[in-house]
Image 1 (cartoon, rainbow, N blue to C red):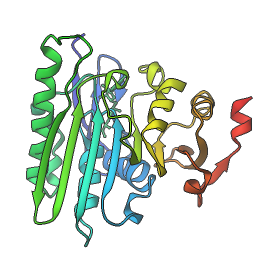
Image 2: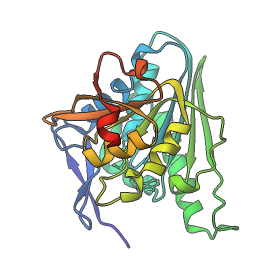
Image 3: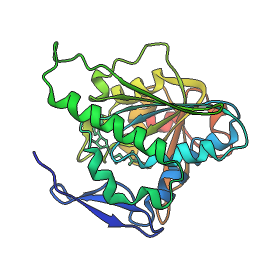
Length: 260
Ligand SMILES: C[S@@+](CC[C@H](N)C(=O)[O-])C[C@H]1O[C@@H](n2cnc3c(N)ncnc32)[C@H](O)[C@@H]1O
């Protein structure tokens, strides 16, 4: 189905897309860029980490989270590598990104071009017949300036088909599909078990979601849970971890309550 996307300016001046066909916004109208930073980068406590950062994202969309993470990473005084793996089953055309005026706030045009390049290859990959149908090769791109490195690995397929090496784990898992009405398979126990399997011992899964069915699915997948004030006027968001210690400083939720 062809979807009709229109750019829309949000409360903090940044832009997101409105999917007219399905009546869905890609990011909060209160502030697309602020939400990306608050829920995902700060929610996962990445700025507290020195050295390298590693992120797994479910849902690249127009790449706001990627750019906000890259900018926060490059703003640090330290050097290191940002390893950013992301799955996306319906990649947007790179030309569409031009409608979001990213370069009005994003300071690294070459990293923006990296994102466009990844999307361009992903669009090609999903339009070509796959042999076999489940074999999607990840698209791997790298940018380096002095000792600062950004590695972007895009799996152009649904998370169920992404061929991530089993032992690969991440400091942060950004759970950012559309809501359960549009993407029900992304709010299920198997999806959270997949994310848990790729989460490091000290890592955090972070999502704007705060519903009871979602928290039940997370607890069933063996995750410990915490709530945190949501972005903008949202009351709550959710964090999840393999170990409860990783959630300290947030409001821990009773796992038993969600396992009932
Ligand atoms: C809210 S948007 C992501 C916004 C993006 N993270 C950003 O910061 O701009 C959700 C994305 O998840 C993707 N998605 C939905 N279901 C998926 C699935 N099963 N596997 C991979 N991607 C999926 C959608 O195509 C959409 O691009």
